[in-house]
Image 1 (spheres, one colour):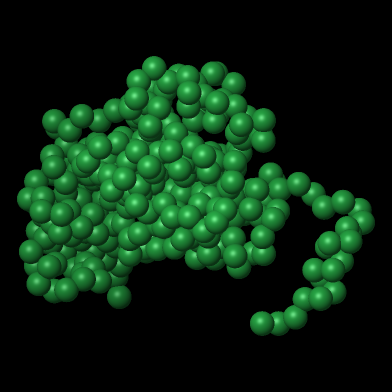
Image 2: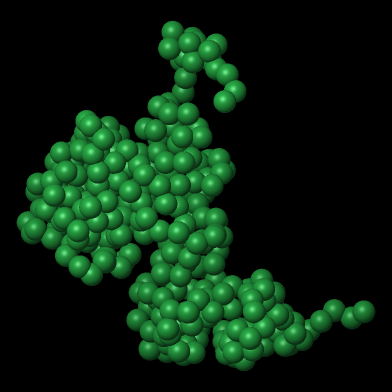
Length: 310
């Protein structure tokens, strides 16, 4: 049997979604692929690429967007889809955003595309802050010139360095999501993807308590509405931060928290608190975990020799 042509692959492709939905968006998806990939490139278009585009279009339809390339393939829409849709591993999010960004730049005419972004590459884990840098970053909260920056940087610091939350998780935290289990503070992460309760490192407790008390039932970051994900990196970029601490990103704060926990708590506990699904997701952190000494400590010996199956 002769291999199918690119046109046949495009015409015959059927994604894993209800037939009614595919009949609704199929012609639009095919037109986008045809526009994004000239005839000379179309032979490279696999069913997987078509499926990624179809996934974005179907999701956008669920968000209430019309079948319009300028709206569905706008930068904010593509980035929100890549970051927030549940069920994808980090490597999958990276490749999806890269592919959709390429398609979007080719099919949109009015969308306000910024200069090309660095890819979301899970293989390049942000380097964690040192303990001294983390303490310095807390001090920077009081250096902010506006109440919005004070509140925003403070929230990012206590939820990032103190609880290891992702950006998408931070923006939804309300003052009432912070609870006390004497003498410690806990933050409840809501949502369908990774709901959990995370103890907050004690050094960040006083600042978190202040922010939660002032926010009450509002988001910690700012007065309602709940901010979009892009709000956080944009705000952090505008904050008064000394150059040695830059770049200030949620990913870097989360990595700092993760390294501290990996040297402190059992792996199952860490995975649960971090909202990870499997151990492969911590590979990038391993170079930052201090090596064990040549001899086991008394505490380590006790833990090992007294270990039993649950």
